[in-house]
Length: 65
Ligand SMILES: [Zn+2]
Ligand SMILES: [Zn+2]
Image 1 (spheres, helix red, strand yellow):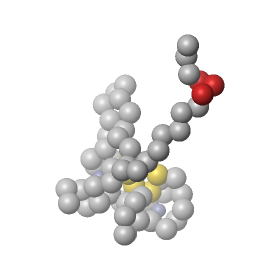
Image 2: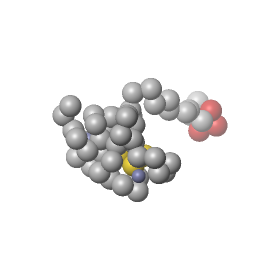
Image 3: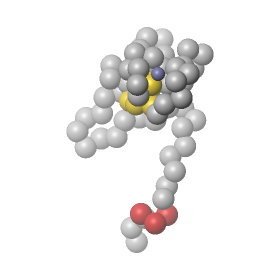
Image 4: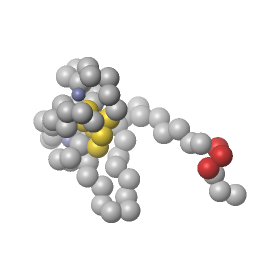
């Protein structure tokens, strides 16, 4: 494990930034996830990596033709 903060999922609880959003020790708060401030801070213009199994929903209406 490289990051104790998020247990390498790359995401933490939005309300508790030192607890992982996924995994056996995931926060049970039920809140939204946030990119881990220690290992998943994207460069400007970049998007944070998503946790494994995370499905990005594509809104058809926002697609450009
Ligand atoms: Zn992390
Ligand atoms: Zn939490």
